[in-house]
Length: 397
Image 1 (spheres, rainbow, N blue to C red):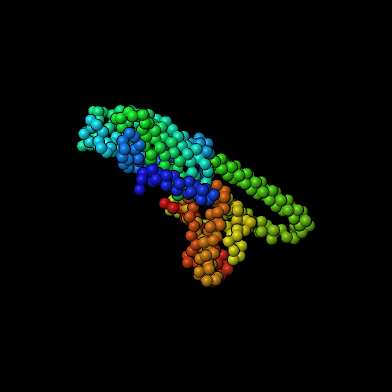
Image 2 (tube, one colour; image 1 turned 120 degrees about the vertical axis):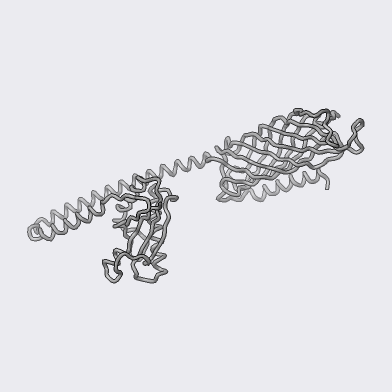
């Protein structure tokens, strides 16, 4: 197969893949603006010079680039190319017909992305730089002597980048590198250069501009949601206080008659409120029972009065940002073991989602559902079953 046909075939394949895959979208699609990319590519080259036989040589490169905009990136590409050639019959005055050059190119390159933000991103590129090289003839004889020379190096080409993950992409590109006319030790009016075809992988570093903007929007929304929730809690508390005062006014006529019972209820409510308002303190290796975190019957939906207890749990987690906890749900023994396991796990996940929504990192929270495997009271009484239906914070060591 002729080298020129191979190069043409590779170009056709890249163009066809671009036409087929560009419309696709994926969770791995990336906006590369504002991100650094480090790439490692390898493949082969075909040297075009004043000799009459083309030979394929190995080559590789390292790329470092930065996304200036969504469609334009800039950076540097450096590597190694072993350029091979042959002349039949040998050139007059040259003992061997075989000839090669060891090249170390380095160029400033600009990339133009044709489908930014897509799972598959075809691109074109061009640049300018220099190549340090040393010529060697057949038998390892240095030409004209054992020293390195310098040539201009102008890379151009097209490529295809397919994102395999959020931070990794697979790359295929083909191109041409123009050099000066003396790279092959012959000046016969032709500009020397070589074609390349390489595959490799790019690793993306940092966060893109679009991701930073999205994070900023999410943080602003989180603050707004938190503020709105606090305002709702204040309003609910004010409404509750107004209702309490109204009820006291209506009950004033019977105050003397009901004073004993009312005082008993007031003291009971005060004790319950004091117990509920106890500060939650997290310690490594300790377990804290979240008293007052309740759910609707046979569901994983929090009751209205549970949020106050969860707020104190939230404050405790904020006060100890280096601690991680296992949220464990427990039930009584009403129902099957399998059903209660699932129910306790769902309730634990509800508590986790509430904490994450209010700013706690999900990485600090894990969940488990124990069903009725770990009772702390007698399941034969209503009070015992109520004690067994509980949520726990197990602080990890």
